[in-house]
Length: 321
Image (tube, rainbow, N blue to C red; front, side, top):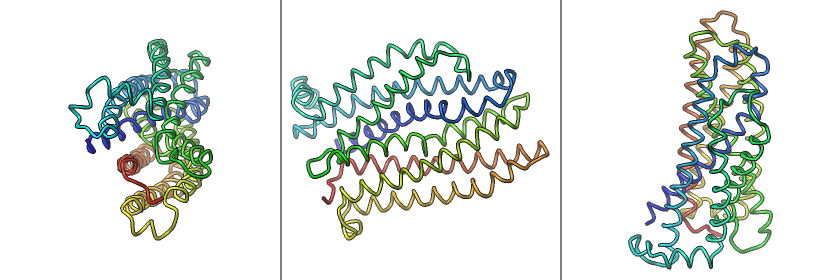
């Protein structure tokens, strides 16, 4: 049961981060960055936009399936029964109707239903930079954001105690920001790969603009994550000794170590690789630097996946406070 709970949480949080991250990448990075190119340059990246569409639809399916698995695991845990016994519909009804987790789950199920209705018109038309309905974009962005941040009402931040509004608010902002960075690293790596695979060279002005915007947005996200993470730790852990002497604190320490390593890689990319990329004049040098940057971005994203697994584990452990 514990293994199912951990994996269900990991996939559910991960898919929610992907949904918000895709929309945020398009709003904050891709659309503004591609305005520097002409229509031909944007058309050359149509395959990348199609891959984003496919990834969005796949993440939504994973969100639904992992949500059902999460409900199953939580039902078994709350009832003290085995996973087989927890398949009883009466237990599910009790959890859905009489617990905070169940009520939040029902609200989120309603939002997922609304998103499902919009999924077909969203994915059947090309995601070009200026060629689709902004109102649909806005509604979908609001729905996926609500689906993600509502998870704050089911975790340790929503437990009883003082300043519960601040705790839930900080956790919600933390989740939303994590969808921008480090989740957005995957989409940046996909973008760089698409640029490298295109038969016709994509305008360097577009590439530089997208990479530069992502760098700025990521820098802001890092500061927000550090601030909201500190708030969460103060309320949930409570003291510095608890960071060392408790199992929860030790897992959190490992998460912080990985976060620092990710910051080191991000700093190398921003202050070493990007200046070289921006001033590269030879096409071959520019291409080689893009490949090197993509490799570091993938490495950074791999560490982010490890952090996500630790977050899923922390959600199943009793906090020190």
